[in-house]
Image 1 (cartoon, rainbow, N blue to C red):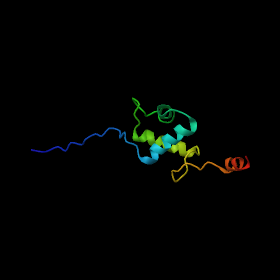
Image 2: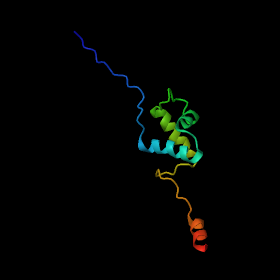
Image 3: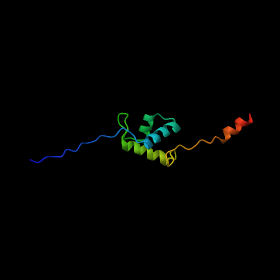
Image 4: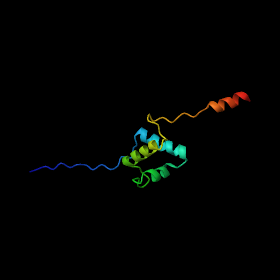
Length: 90
């Protein structure tokens, strides 16, 4: 008797890697879009409000390419120089 090996088909992983979560959240913060709007805008692979790994990777790639995400995954610092000067004058 021959045994068959059954390969389990895995569906999309809905848990995003931290860098991809960051990319989605950063675009959500910068542009003011909702998270689902970001998914609709950047990843047509999103189904039923859930984002696939491929869709999340696409979001991260596009956000990075548009200059909203720096290479190390940290948001650019806000220039607080002018705010400090105006506070010290008053």
